[in-house]
Amino acid sequence: MHLLRIGGCALLLSLASCVSPIGRDHQPPDVSAITPGSYTWQPAQPVDHLPKGEWWKAFNDPELDALETRARAGSPTVQAAVARVEQGRARARASKVDFFPDIRFHPAFDRQRTSGNLPTPVPVSIPAAQINSFSVPLDLSYEIDLWGKVRRTVESARNTAAASAADYNQVLLTLSADVAAQHFTRRALDTEIAALRRTLALREGQLRLLEQRAAAGTIAQTDVFRARTELSNTRSDLADAIRLREEAAAALALLCGEPAGRLPLTESPLGTNAPPTVPPGLPAQLLERRPDIAAAERLVAARNADIGVAKAAYFPSLRLTGNAGFLSSDVDSLFSVDSRTWSIGPSLTLPVTGYAVIGARVRNARAAHAEATAQYRQAVLGAIRDVETSLAQVRYRAEQSAALAESLASARQAEDLIRQRYDRGLVSQVELLDAERTRLLVELRHAQILAQQHIASVRLIKSLGGAW
Image (tube, rainbow, N blue to C red; front, side, top):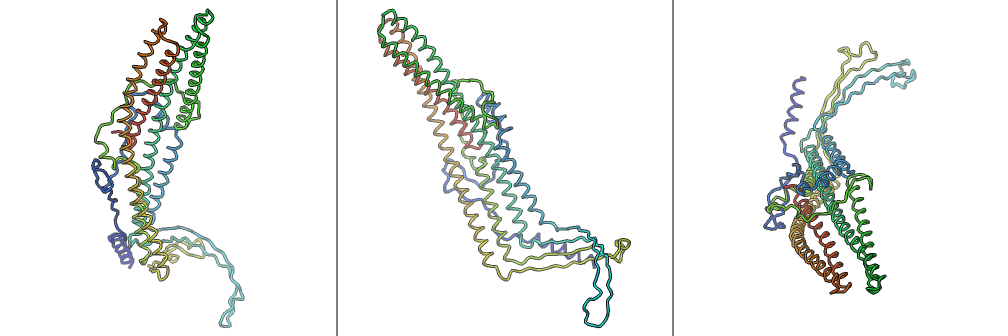
């Protein structure tokens, strides 16, 4: 008899596992209509979990390497992302519990006294009594997953956890890109500060010389006033550049999870070397590399599974319940053969009312799936925009930087020639100050554009999902 019962239960479980889950299996949304011809569309096979590599080392900047390491180790943003991944994984593990029977063990002892004046239908006196009850039961409850509700629930939780993991990769990628961009901004400010200090020292020397000439009566006092004005303006520009540099350093400290001012940052002007070149052809692999697109696709899969969970409520649920254990009035005979108890039986639950509520939940699940699909397409469009914008920035920032480099070389040559002519008395001080001012403006502008050129390369790498 017991073998028949166990065989029947096993048969039900095997039948339940063979029945296809309610709802449609996930199909990645087709975005071929919104992707340009240079982007090869294929069904999503996210590879965002693969190592992205230390892409920042392509810039050959040891200080940037150290900052990236500190940021990944100390950023609270990364720590929060790790915690979210753990939450998602824990929920996914918890969703698998319904695959197994719920077995509970709760031994109990009860002592009670019955009344000696109990009402009875016959005139029989039942004396009062004290009764002990010892029980050691095991209760079992299990809902057979006939329609795939549990399987769809696990599928939804698993994809949601995978989306959290993709979000973590996106946080890492964004953090690394932000650190690199802020680092190059600070180095550009260091370049500006160095140029302003050189100009300041030059103008201080010029002012001393002009003051000596004015005291000797060889030049007009207006030349001294002009020199003092330019010197004060340079000091003002230097103070502003130092202020911006301190703000950039504080932003870097925040990204690294450290208090402002504690981060060791030496002055390191940005050189004239161009940033690394990103190989062509990478945009075709964009849909597989970007963590944000992978996260959006997995959320679509999770919301699709939720539709199956909602639809399963339309169908009857089959539950097996049972208990087994020992029950006795005294401890000595508690575990004897005669004290054994057990019961087992199935129950079937079929909704009679509430179909309107179930229908509303199904419509809500379908709407959530439609929303996730639209967000996935939006993520693809945003990724294409990021790549195209970054490619344009890399190209035209390089052209702009080259043009400014030529302009700076010409401005320096013009300044040297005008200074030579000024020393021979062939041109006025106004022309010399104008040449110095032009050279300084071009030098500062070139430093800013060179930083933007590096930042454009960083953004392109980020938009492509990391290292190549």
